[in-house]
Image 1 (cartoon, rainbow, N blue to C red):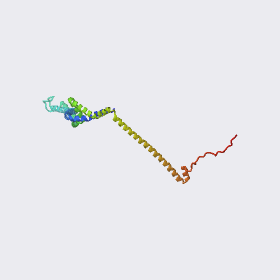
Image 2 (cartoon, rainbow, N blue to C red):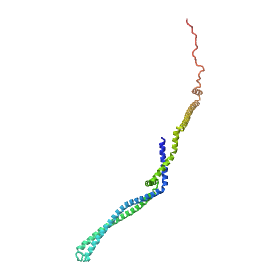
Image 3 (spheres, rainbow, N blue to C red):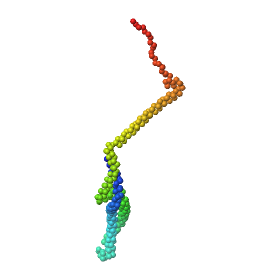
Image 4 (cartoon, rainbow, N blue to C red):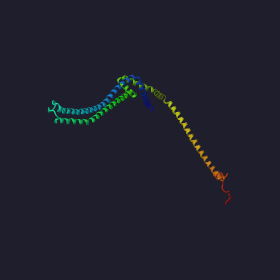
Length: 294
C-alpha cells in the first residue's frame, strides 16, 4: 500500500527536477527553436492585424473616392453647362445654332449651370464632412494597428517561460530521437536514485521478517499504555479535587449559617453534634422468672 504512492511521488519528483535540468542541458537548441517560433508567430500576428485594418482602411478609402467622384461629377456639370452657355452667347464656332445671342439654348444651358452649381453648393459640406470623417477613421486605425502590432510583438518575445521552453524541447525531441532517449534515461535515473531507500527498506523487510517493525510496534504499544495510565490518573485526580471542593463548600455554608443565627444549638443541631448515639444499644426489658407448670 505504501509502495504505489511512493512510486508516484518519485515520478513527480523526477519530472519536477529532471525537466528543468534537461532544459538547461539543451538550452542552445531550445533557444534556437524559440527564435524560429517567435519569428513565425510575429509574422503571423502582424499579417493578421494588418489584414484586419487594411480591410477597414480600404472601405473608408472607397467612401472617400466615391465622395470625391460625386463632387467632381457635379463640378463637370457646372463647367460644361457654363461652357455651352458661353458658346451660345459669344462663340459661333461651338454654338449649336451658329448664331450669337442669348436665345433659348443659352437660357437652357444657363439654367443647367445654375442648377448644377446650386446642387454642388448643397452637397459640398456633406462631401467634405464625409471625407474628413473617413480620413480621421483611417488615421485612428493606423495608430491602433501600430500599437497592436507593437504589443503583440512584445508579448511574443516575452513568452519564454517554462511551458514555452518545454514545448520547444518537445519539438527538438521530435526532430532528434536521440534527445528523447537521453531525456527518458535521465528521468529514469532520477527515479531509480529516489527509489534506492525504498528498495533497501523492502529488502530488509522481506529478509528479516519485519523484526524491526514488530519491535517498533511493541514500543508504540508501551507508549500507549503509559499514555493510558496518565489519562486515568488525571481522571482520578480530577474526581478527587472535585469532591474535596464540594465538601469544603458544604462546610463553609453550614458555618456561615451558624454565625448568622447566633445560636450554638442550631449550629450543633445542624452539624448533628447533639444527637450522640448510646454506647450500648437497648437489649429490651429484663427477663422475669415464670413458674414451671407440672
